[in-house]
Image 1 (tube, rainbow, N blue to C red):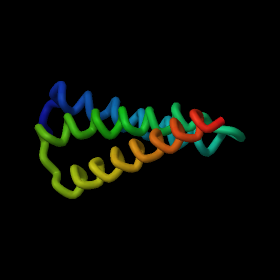
Image 2 (spheres, one colour; image 1 turned 135 degrees about the vertical axis):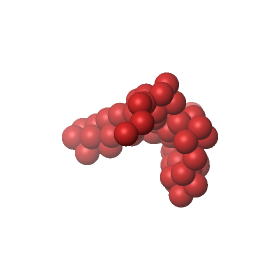
Image 3 (cartoon, rainbow, N blue to C red; image 1 turned 120 degrees about the vertical axis):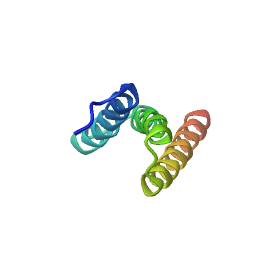
Length: 84
């Protein structure tokens, strides 16, 4: 088994962000979209850093879509906030 490097630890933090955002979304009656999508975007970014070093193409593509959806969600939340 190989020792974990800094990139792997960054990936673990990204994983924790995504899991925490999903838990918060599921547990909350009125989740804050900025918190959910912002945490998902941060998680995707951190996992991407890890995946650039330890390339796994399917996971890298997944994180690209995950980040794009998070950005879309943040954009919708900003537009809704401005319209309110």
